[in-house]
Length: 210
Image (cartoon, rainbow, N blue to C red; front, side):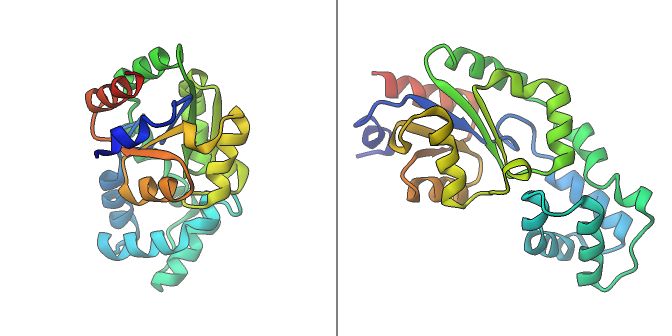
């Protein structure tokens, strides 16, 4: 039995969307290339340290400047000036993390039948940019890690979506472009699928309606 067939056992009432890679273009490569040049550190080494140290930043417990100073300390390098550090997250994001307009059209369409939610591991600067873009206006609820102090894969983060919508986890479909978060959502009782394209998502949702 395929995963869609399993999901059809219970009616879906809400759909939860990740941001990066699903609703906006992934900017990770451009971000790492730029930060690697500015900090004069190999991208692979920098990526490893960022992944080790990003939890506090994503939970809103420190500023980006504090984060970068800590990263520089871990790398044992001299930090660039603050005015340089302040652009590392924002400049590549504004340029490369473009909104997927076709996905927002789909969200608008799905909202006619389902409650829709954004749930994302993110940072203050990116939340501000997306707020200015108006992307959050398309959703019934917005759950951003930097605002509520929780992040994937924490169970409480997924539970917040259930509470906000008053919908049980087994009636929520989670859509993410990273399998580790899809697996986490399934572990915590949600339906979850790996995002591949707008068309494949539409097909999955269509099957769930039958």
